[in-house]
Length: 184
Figure 1: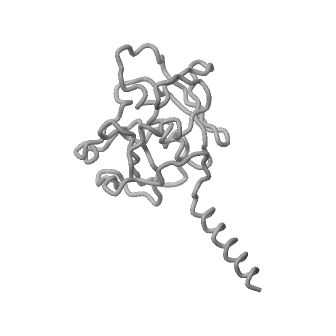
Figure 2: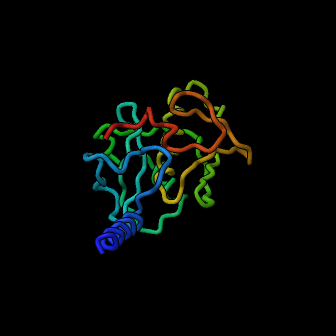
């Protein structure tokens, strides 16, 4: 009888975890926004929140934004491309994507998001490309059921910098930018 009760409790707990949307990852990742990264006052209220990753003190930092569900991958990407709100800017957040054509669109197929890029090599002298690509992967990788992100240009995979500076054309995960994630 005790074993049945324990099994029932375990199944209930697993059901709650699944219902709450806690994803399964191959590597640890931040679970949510930092305490001081709440929704900004000038963002319209929504009934749910989505995470975007901005840059603060040279680190990828998650910020929650209120949204009206369901939010398609393009809408989530638009939240990121809009950059930080005035309030977030006042708190030290910025975007490494500002003024770039690194991202021109995205499509999701199951657990993979394919991000269309502009001319990646046409922006010489940029030193924060790693942070820019990290922002995209960190943001889109926080969506369920997304697990991986690839970047393409004209249908061909593009090699982009990972957090350690190496280049990859393979599917990327949040774990590929672990060294750039802000500690929570």
